[in-house]
Length: 155
Image (cartoon, rainbow, N blue to C red; front, side, top):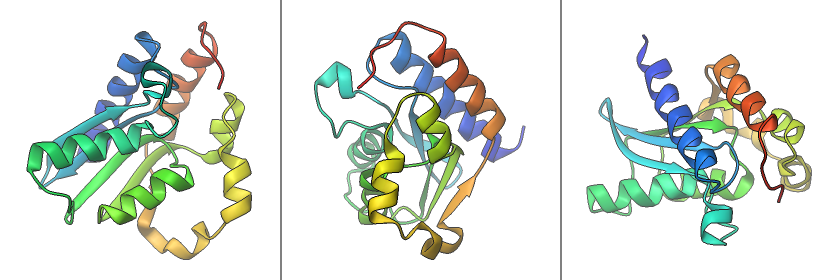
């Protein structure tokens, strides 16, 4: 299994943990540095009653704690859904080198999330070049399908 697929699988596993605990949507993230996973997070919006507890933010916080730094230069992040603007900016503030995502903003909408509303409002993703790279979308779509077919709270 290629490294990108292996790290995306870790993000999928993290997302499954979150939805099994009913913490939030099917969004899991893994921060990677030097070929090693150094931070993990899944959506905990419902579990923490915190609208900012998205998978990417939780993974960034975890990686910073583990590494003892606020600067994640040289790190990449793998996430099951294309980041919302809040998470995208958090990645940039943390100096994440590159973002690898599975499902798209449009896919997020298919399972009831409103990322497209903010994407339309703020725009600008086209100016990011190769900062955002789609990886393993089919595996992430399966995760999203599983989520859609199970009981869950929409928010």
